[in-house]
Every structure is written in C-alpha cells, then in structure tokens.
Image (tube, rainbow, N blue to C red; front, side, top):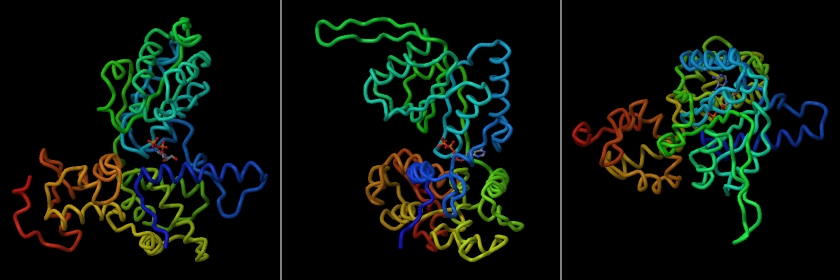
Length: 360
Ligand code: ADP
C-alpha cells in the first residue's frame, strides 16, 4: 500500500508534482477534471487580509508595504525565514499582489552559475519582485553578485570568454528581492544584512489552523461538521501545507463514502489510513523516535547517524522532523546529540530503564 507521509518537505515535492500534473491536464481541458476541482494555487490567499494567523508579522508587513506605497518606491528587500510549508511563497506572492507588480520566481538550487542570476537580474522590470526560494542554497559567486545588485542596483555582465573577456557594468531598475529560507543561519551575514525586513514565520497554533482548514474547505466545497476542522488541525504539525493536504485526503474519503458532511470520526478514520497519528506524527517521525529510543536507548545520538538509521537526508530530519518533535517535547537537542524525552517513550508505549533527565 502506498504510504503518505505528512512531512512538509515531502509534501513540497509532492505538491510540486501534483501541481504540474494538474496544470498540464488543465492545459488541454476547458472543464474541471475528475474530482480535483482546484489546484493548490487556488488555496493560496491573494491578499494580506486572507493570510491566516501570524498577526505580528502581518502588522509589520502591512506597515512596511503601506510606507513603500506612500513613498512611491519599491520596498526594501525582504527575507522570509522559517520551516517549510508555513507560507513563505504565499507571502511573497501577496506582497507582489498588494504592490500590484509582477513577480519572478526562482530558487537557490535552480541558479547554477552567477551568469544565470545575472541574466534574470538584467531582465527585471522596474518595481518587479524577484522571489528566490531556498536562497541559502545559492552558489557563492551568485551570492556575491546578488549583494551588489541588491545594494547598488548594478550587475557586471561578462562578455566573451577567456583572456579576452570583459565585464560590462549594467545599471538595473529598482526591484525588490524576497528571499525565503528554511536555514537562516546558513546565509552569510553580508547577504543577510542586505534585507531591510526579516520575517520569521512560526508554526501555527491549532486555532489558526482550524480557521485555515475551514477556509480551504470552503474553497474545495467540503462541508465540515463541528470539531472536524479541529481534528485535522491537531494533526497538522502547525503547518498550513500539511493542514491543506490532510483536508484533501479527508475530502477524498468524503467523496468515496458519499458523505454530505465530514464528521470528526471520518477525519480520524481517513487519517489513520494514512498512518498519521493523533499527535500528527507520521511514519518518519515515528521512525526517528524509534531509532533514538530503541537503537540508542534514548540517546544521545548525532544527527548524521540518526538520519542514516531512518534512511533520510540529514537536512530533512533537521528541518522537517526535528523542529516539530522538539517543539512538541518528544526530542531534545543536546551538544552530544538528540535525546528522547519521557513523552517520546510513552508515545511508543515504552518505559525508559534509566532516568531520562540524566541524559540532557
Ligand atoms: P512555504 O513557501 O513556506 O514552503 P507556502 O507559501 O508554499 O509555504 O504554503 C504552503 C501552502 O499553505 C500554500 O498552498 C498556501 O495555500 C497555504 N498557506 C500557507 N500559509 C497560509 C496562511 N497563513 N493562510 C492561508 N493559507 C496558507
């Protein structure tokens, strides 16, 4: 049976693929296809008002945008930092929308050479937003080119090759870079210093996710009974992308079972099928906890060893699994490695042999 993991990272890829498929199907069809009436894009709010939660960040951003509008200049560059699936891309699109300017989307890994970035920069229109996802993964030479472009609105374009190559300075129109990163610490400080506003997105509390699920259910045409949004929210790991994804799977369940309204028992049954437990932990989280508890007697265990044990990239374990496990009190990061808490042992139905607190 195919398994569904609700890690935000995997969802990122999965949604990217689904999005592409849906999009290509749409290209050849004027009518909605099957039971997939809306794409992920349509779940994205387009204005700051529709962006749910993160009230402080929204107030800061609103002020920042209002000031830019009043001054009639493109706003300073913006850095959005936080774990995957919390709304960084959505916010970047909202900023462009609110300013009524076009947005160009790229990402650190997509830019392999400084020249790739130079050609994007030199084709930007005045006021345009350049969104660079995973900006911490830009190659070093591109990063250096970006500092200068962000500060002086200038880029040096290399013409020719070898000893005859010359660099031609090109003045750029004013534009706004919005960088998104899941690893703010990996950004070199000169690059970080070029951003006039840095927003840290945090995991969403259950009440905010409930509102988000209710909103998305409205868009998807799913009728939710009382408490059903809550049952999904508590399993969404504080992450909107996961909340939307769980909702889609619950929607599938409702369609297959001909339900006119989704009740909490339906949510539980649908999500159990996908191995998402009552705390929102999925197969990968449980594998991580099992490795620390069973193979290392509660830890400490280093990140690389742990990642190898569960067969995942250490970046995925560190940026996707761990923040939630740490935040929910299942895991503690110590200088010697990761340690499982009593809550983790209890969640696995086990009792630690030794006093767990001595490991911290
Ligand atoms: P990130 O770029 O941080 O990985 P995204 O912006 O792609 O995350 O958000 C993932 C999905 O979650 C989007 O499809 C969007 O619909 C939804 N989403 C994220 N944050 C919010 C929010 N605050 N309000 C409503 N929907 C949101």
